[in-house]
View (cartoon, rainbow, N blue to C red):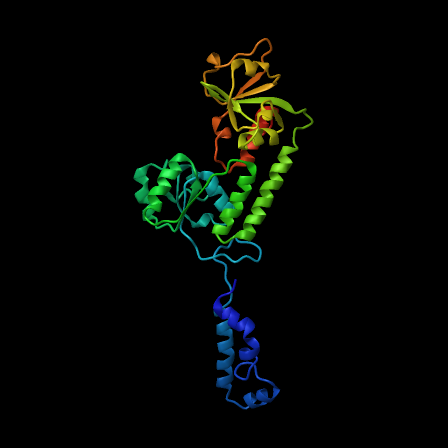
Length: 315
C-alpha cells in the first residue's frame, strides 16, 4: 500500500518527474547544464526528499510478504487463544491489555492485567485506551465486552464451535487487522499441522472411544461439533458418532451397550465413586480435562495433540 504521494510519483512521473521541471529531455538537459550548480543540486535534493518521504514503510517488523502493516492499534484481548492468534498474525505487539491467561504467553507479561475479567477490571481496560477488543464469546467475556462496548469501544467476539469455524476466525481476524495475506499463511499452517497429526497413530489401530462430559444426567460427546472432531482427528472412533448431535444425554444401559475400548472421563468426579458402571467388561477409563471439550475454542491443534497423547501415548 502506498501513500498518496507514492501514487503521484508512480503514476505522475511521466508528467511531473519526466517533465521539464525534474526530468528534462535532451534539449532541456542542455539548458540545465548551463544553470548554476546550486540550482541543479537543489533539484536533485528535492527528488531525493520526495522519494524518501513517500516510500512505503512497515509499522510491524515481523510482517512478511508484500503486505504492508496498518498503523499500530491498541488491542485488548479477552482470551488466551485469541492472544496467541494475534501473535501469530504479527499483532502481538499491539496488545495493550489482556486477561491473566493471555499474560502467561511469551512477550505479554508486561501488558495491563485484566485478571479473570471481573467487572472491576473494566476501568483498567478503558484506561489502556483500546480501539479494538477481541476474544472468545464465553459468558464472562460477553459481559466484560458489553461494558466496554457501551462506552464506544469496538468489540469482536468469536464463537467457533467446529474446525471449519476455527479457520474462519483466523481469516476474519486477519481482515480486522488488515493482514489478510498473513492470515492465509497462518491458516494454511494450522491446517497442515492438524492434517499431519490426524495421520499419526504410530501403527496403532483406531480406538473406539466414549467421551463422558456429564454425570447427572449422564452425557457424552455426540457425532458433531468440535469435541467430536477432536476425537476423530486424534485418531479415535467416537462410539456415539452416529447420533449426529454435539452433546447427548444417555442411560447407563446405552453406555454399557457400547463396545468401547476407552472412556475419556471429563466429569471431574471421584474415580472411586464414578457415575457410571460397566458390566461385564470394563474399558480403559482415563480422567480427561474438561477444558478439552469446552466451546468455543481456537486451540484446536493443541486439543487434538492432548487427546492423541491420552489415547496413544507420547507428547
